[in-house]
Structures are given as C-alpha cells and as structure tokens.
Amino acid sequence: FEQVSVTYDGAAEPTLRDVNLRVDEGELCLVVGRTGVGKSTLLGAINGLVPHFTGGLLAGRVTVDGHDTRTHPPRELADVVGVVGQDPLSGFVTDVVEEELAYAMEQLAVPPATMRKRVEETLDLLGIADLRHRSVRTLSGGQQQRVAIARALSNLPRLILADEPTGNLDGRSSKEVMDVLKSINDHQQITTVLVTHDPKVAAYARRTFHLEGGRLKELAR
Image (cartoon, rainbow, N blue to C red; front, top):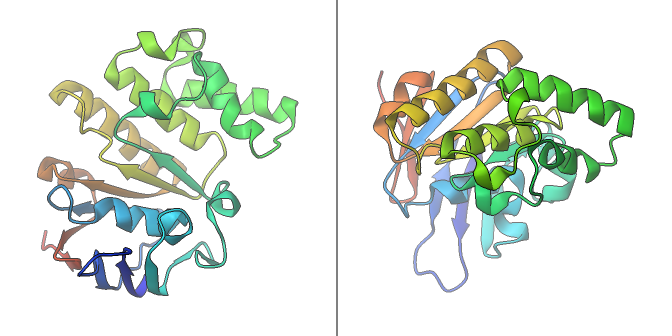
C-alpha cells in the first residue's frame, strides 16, 4: 500500500486514510480493529474488489505480487490471492466438500488431471480427507472453515486473505482454525493477511496493526 485512501460514494469521510503498508513474502500480518472501521475494505483493496466491485474512489497504489490492483480486477488476481471469509457456508457454491475444492479450479480452467491431484493434496494438507464426500451443510463451523481454507489453497495462491475467520467459532474451533492458518504460513510460506476484532489472535502474527479512523498503526509487541 502506498498512500492509499478509499472514499465510498456519498461518504463524508474516507474509510481508509493515507495507508502505507508493506507485507513481506511469507509473513503472517494481522490487522485488528472494531467492527465497521474498514478492515474488510483493506482486504478488498488487496484483491481488487475495491474499487472494481464496491465503487468509490481509491487514491494511491496497491500492488500485489507485482500487479497493480487498479489495472487488475479480481478475476485476474484469482490465481494469486485466495480469500477466506467469516461465514464459509454463505460462500460455498456446491454441496459436497471435494466438489467445492474442484469448483475453484474449474473457474481457472485447470486441467482435470491436475485438478484431481490438487484436490487430493489439499484435502490431506488440511486433514479433511475423511470429509471429502460430506455435504458442507452437515459440517461443524470449524470443519466448514477448514474447507474454505482448502478451497482458497487449491489454486496455489501466493497470498491468503482471511476476513474474521474465527468470528463465528467457539474458542476451541477458533484455535484449530488459527493453528491451520499458521501451519500453512509456516510450512507453505504463503503470505497471510488476517483481519479480526479478536486481540487474542495477535499471538499468531509477526506484526499486528490497529485500524482506527481510517489510519493504520503498527502495535508494539
């Protein structure tokens, strides 16, 4: 992020103000802040949803893996950025776990043989091979979130964006999901940017930033 501000149509004030941020390759970076302060806008600016789908004015420059998001809409960043949201069930487009993983790759025209191999590898990586034939609607919240993470990983992204991934989970499931994200970050070296209102998640991050009044400030460890 280089001097990035985002102002939505009709808003009196910018949602983001003069944000400067560099996330290193392989880093797990955390952004905390109250609900409604613009954390999701920050993530949306990374994968191009802001301003391509949200509208509004984006000033400054956001670059992801060498791609300027102003000239690269989300569909052109889909093989670079994977997204994990707060409510995985609302984002699923199929009913069966392994079909959900395959769907993400179908959108990028991944060859069938490669697709099958990646599905197997990703199910094993997330420890959910036993869920492959299950309906996503029969899974627990923690299991659904693991499937959402697996789907995000299936296209071999360079970066994972996690938007309140533990927001709807109990304490035990929250820890399991964060342990999975941290393990992926450690062992796969996939850069991760996670936003949350839960300060306990800070223990997993190398750096933590606080967003308030549209401004981003790094917190001391």
